[in-house]
Amino acid sequence: MKVLVIMFTKILQRILKLFGRGSSLPGTIARKLSPNILNKFKLPNITICVTGTTGKTSISGILCQIYEQAGYTVGNNSKGSNLEDGVISLLLENSTVTGKVKTDVLVIELDERYVKRVFKHMQPDYFIVNNISRDQMARNGHFDIVWNDIHENITDSIHLILNADDPLIYRMALDHQGKVSYYGLRRTKYSRDKANGALDLSYCPICHHKLIFDYFHYGNIGGYHCPNHDFSRPNVVYESVLNDDGSFTIDGQVIQTENNALYQIYNLSAGYVTALVSGAVDREKIAYALNYLKLKTKRLDTFQIGKVEATLLLSKNDTPISYNQSIDYICNQKGKKTVFLGFNTISIMYNIKDISWMYDVNFELLQDESIEKIVCMGSFAYDIGVRLKYANIDMEKVVYFEDSTPMLSIIAENTIGHAYLVFPFDMEHQFQALMKEKVK
Image (cartoon, rainbow, N blue to C red; front, side, top):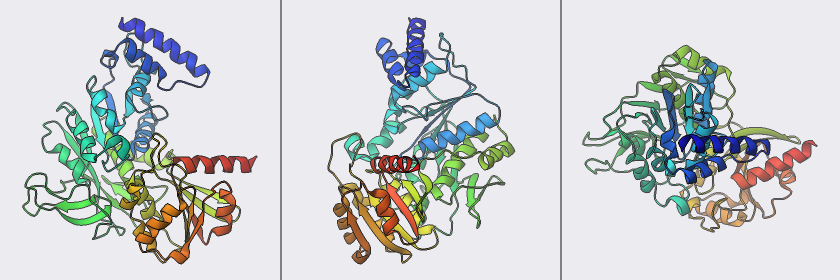
């Protein structure tokens, strides 16, 4: 039965590929034919799962580049679905008809709500948890629900790779009897002494006293300790240190970055530590891969619009930490700036009108004197304006365009200095389509 299901769905997968379709459909059909199909596959010795509110795709891509540069074959679902059926499709694509995965390494990007469904049937060798924060309330509810879904499905056979700077993530290691490796970032010149916004974990999970945060990188992430010494940022063997030129040093290796966004350092550090502890790649080869292979990231890209240089920062609606990382990045850049904020739909998955998530975004940081103008665009332009008013932004700097159709001309005519476009998926797709049309 197993061989027949795998054979049939592999044939279907090849047919769908000819038409450019079906990233997860073969997995859907395989699961319906055999509900336990995931535990029918024989996995390679290095199987890595990556999850978190943000950074999953970037870390997966980084790992693929490290292993491929070192000469290993890698199976990865970064371009496909990161839900249960997408994982099955990945295994189908990279296995024999008997279910033996042919690649040396598997790197599985896994949606945080689907960890429990996948881990029920298969266990990875290494599991990276980058961060957990409030995200997509219509789907996830409270972030504690997401945390529990992940934590309850981790077995001691899994080697955890955890972001030590997120207390919510470190909490996962407290009762883990298996191996744990940490990555983190030492305090930088961009770190703050005070939090900007709500914290996702404020109290010690052991004695319940309020945690003391020594510094914040962004959001809930930084240095922390319990006044009763029950819970504190662990000793990080692979701690990254930001250098003055924007590079960072980890484990004695200097890694150059395409930008000085702190979240990118976490992504690179997660990849470095995982590849190293897997024992398959030495530190020099890992550093070479990170330094000389271009990162494929959708989050940050630069464009020329007439005489205006613009940076697009893809930021998820319903995910405050994503917006906060973008705003942090903008504030850390030099020179005069114009910030463009906008969206026409709140969610690409649900028909909702809830904008409460905007009040967890640190728009207060846009009080920065280097920001000359803020342009609110799209159907929710005035809702964004209201939030900016509550953030005590100088409203004389704010202008509105409800119609985002002439987006490129709006950017070209309203930019002072460098343009920073903080757009979610709907506005990003519109922007990219207009840029392609312009090139024709």
